[in-house]
Length: 115
Length: 113
Image (cartoon, rainbow over all chains, first blue to last red; front, side, top):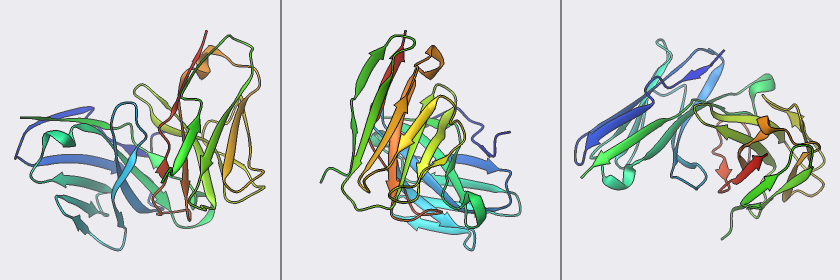
């Protein structure tokens, strides 16, 4: 049973436009949500996170929105740049009990930003 | 400024052979993790450690063992490699659990023939 779902395997966007990557989750115990970016032959790198007590977190060109009632979050990249082309992973963790230490990852979305 | 270093970067094994993957971090992090990434599967947690001398099972622990004898090192062992263990293995560390970002190494690409 997949607890974190990224239903779009790939997304293609023009340079300068907005990229919107989506993520859905099923476990209501998740309290923290993180986005990672991964280039080929490299490890994932942390991008931005949001706590469940917030509905928006912004860092430069990157904004994450959380809709807790819909169990949905999205990552907005504005404006998109060719260097943003990578696989983006959504991840979630709880804050209590056995899930405290662990991140559950989605399968990833390949973003391609075309010049 | 090494962060998380994984050794080796590539390895080819024959079925039934054993090997150990080494992960070292220089950030004094308490928590360390081993993941595997397979095509279309995202990252799946194999084992993790919340401190020196501790280990725990993750989502897909079968066929693997781990040890955390020193705080900075986390070893992943395959006792008898199987083709199903062909994957890219990532090690990560974090200062705390939960929502704290994990820092990843660049991975070990392992092929089992």
